Image (cartoon, rainbow, N blue to C red; front, side, top):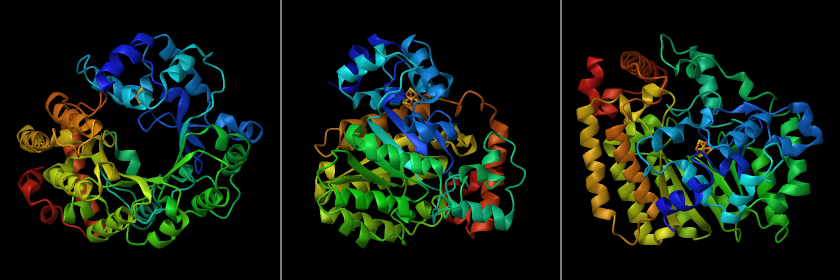
Length: 443
Ligand code: SF4
C-alpha cells in the first residue's frame, strides 16, 4: 500500500488527526528529563519523582494522554502543527503523521485508537538521548543539544540583537537541558536502565540513541555492550545517531556492533565548504570517509542521511543527493537512504527566508534532479515523496510557521545571527555562499 492509500484507507478513517506516534513512539532526553512524541511537538517535562517507581511514565505523561484523547476525537493537538501545516496544503499532502503511523501494524493502530487515553502504553519505537555532549555546534542547533554550543555562549556571551522567535535559542546556556553533571547520578537515566532491564528490551522494536553526539557518551557504549553481551535476549533493533565527525571512534563502532545489523543515522544536507559552514565542526572529507568506511563494512542495515532543510543548504542540496545516489549504486539501494526534514525553528533559518526568485531557482534544480531519478530502481518511494514534498513546500508555504509570518524581523535576525556566527566561528558567509552574497549584503 503506498503512502497516500495508507492515509486515505487506514489513518483517516480512524480520525482526521490520529497519529500512532502519540502511543508508540517517543523521544526522551534523559539529561533534561523531557519527552515528546516525535521531533515536531515541543518537549515537556517528565515527573522526576514518579519515574523512580514507575519508569513507564518516562513516556506516558499527562500531556501525551491529553493529546491522545484529542486524536481519538479527531481534533488536532496544537503541538503537532508541523503536520497540520503540511496537510492543509491539500487532502493528498502526506505529513509525518502518515510516515510515523505506517511503520506499525494496522492492528496496533486499531488497538491504540480504542485504548483508554489515560492508559500506560508500551513503547514500540524509542529515541533517547543521554546527554548533550557534542563536538559540533551547527548553526541550526543550540546549547540544549551541544556542549560546544554551550562553550560558544560561555566564552562569547549571548548572541545580540535577535528579535524573532529563534532568539532564545542563542542567548543562554540552556542549563535545564543538563540537570545533572556527567559524573552525577541521574534519576531519569537510572529509570531508563531499570525499564530497559525489566520491560523495554522485550517490547521495543527499535531503540535509537541520539544526543548530543551519542558516541561520546559512556551510557551509549554501556547499551551497545549490553547488546553484544546479551545476544539473543532482545529482538530490539538498535539504531545510533552520529555526526560521524573526525573524532568519532569508527574502529570501536565497527568492532562493537559486528553481527548486530544496526541502523546508523547521520546528518548532512549539503556538501563541501557549505556543509562545513552550516555544521560547524564538520570536516566534509572526513564525513565522506567515515560514511564510506561504514558502507564498505556491509554490517549496517542502512545508513540514513538526515537532511535538515534550512536556507543555506538549498544551493547544493542536489549535490548531496547525487552523492547519496552514487553510494546507492555502488553499495545497493538500501545501503544508504535520505530524508528531507524541513527546518521550522529558528524561523530565520527556514528555507522560506530566501527571496522567492532564489527559491524558485533551487526549487527548479530539485525538480530537475527528481525528474532524473524518479523512475530509478535506486530511489525509494519515501525519498521521492520527501523530495516532492520539499518542492511543494518551497512553492506553496509562504511562512515558516503560523506565529512567524512577519518577514522583516526574520531577515533582520538572519543577518544578525550569521554576522555574529562568522565572528565567533572564524567563518565568512560570502565566501561560503557566493550565490547568496549579494542578497546577504543587502540585508
Ligand atoms: S507532529 Fe505529526 S508525526 Fe509528530 S506526533 Fe504529531 S501528528 Fe504525529
